[in-house]
Length: 217
Length: 217
DNA sequence: TCGATGTATTTTGTATACATGCGCAAGGTA
DNA sequence: TACCTTGCGCATGTATACAAAATACATCGA
Image (cartoon, rainbow over all chains, first blue to last red; front, top):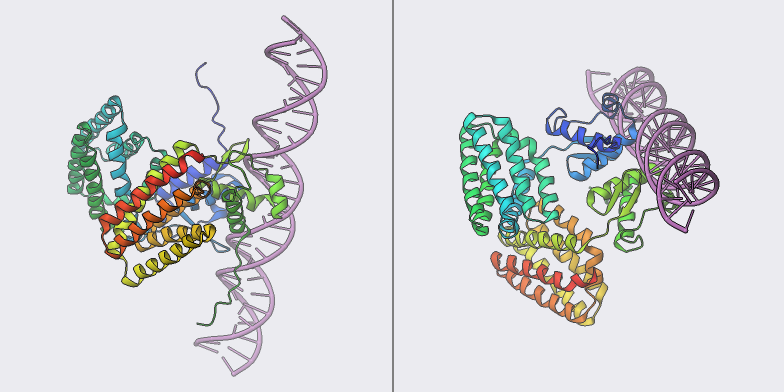
């Protein structure tokens, strides 16, 4: 097999989905605002067909709402939405933690510990954005270790929907310190393969996430 | 407010989504088989545009898989898929049970108990289909009592994807009796508002569902 | 001036036409 | 005969045209 020189011939649909998803997460398309179909298809330089298909996909993901004959809007999360999502996410990550302790290989756990070290390095340097990205990766990777694809998918979905709010909400330094402490506990439990303790830690972590985030909605 | 005389002007998209979803759940469209776009749009008497949008929605729901330039197929669940879905569903319903005990009103609990009575009546009469439908409703209603919309959505999604397999897998009489016993325990715990016990019961119930179902995949 | 009603304009929904890429089979070559 | 090549047909992907609905706006009357 030669080096991978394949042209990633992704369909326009897929490209539009990830592009618009990013626009929503980055806040370029503001929550609650109408999605101007004509404007966006012009900027993205695609026709209405793949664009509208993409909207359907994003609607199913929960990022946009299509109101029949009235256009689509970027879904705006209420406090109740965010609370319920964090409640479910906490419970899912508890399961992920427990399963990871039971099913992950030693190298996989070590890899996650290494990732954690890199996060700590970012924290010491106060490199917010790299930390944030590693953090996202930490949680997805932990879900992977559960060896449960449904769990991974659902966690990824909620993560994506909350991404923006969590980013906004984690600005305060003391919040950051708290999150770091949570992670220390999680990694310790993971090293010991103590599923119960890891599950509790993940659940608690997300419980505190609500406290950190709730005022920025 | 007068009686609701609004004309339900559902878009073709929505109609196609629910129609095709039913075709998949009912097994008319067989798992793993290619979806013949031309044939279906003819039978449904719609054009390709709303049909293809509907496919995107169903793909996001996990019922079909669109392979770029290669057509769509009805997603075929592997044993691993079903196991992971039941594992997550069990965990979600555990949460639903715990939250329901904490948050539901007395009348709501009573309504669920009544529903349970009707299920028992069906069981005594060996009315399989009505029982099955009431059972679906029982689980959705219990999720409602959690007052957590995200939980409801995710539970509904997994339910829909598993619907067909669960129906096939619940044919044996002894399986049915076991499921009924599980429900008795669940309702007892719910009456007592014993969240922990209800959570365990729901989780155990779905654990046994795997046993009932696993050979029919 | 305010409101109601009818009309114009914009926007969305659906159908269809056109483009592209995949799979398969016919034909050629070793 | 087995395997590779090549070209054609057809399914899929995308663009555009047309239809219907909703919104904005203007005109008329009280």
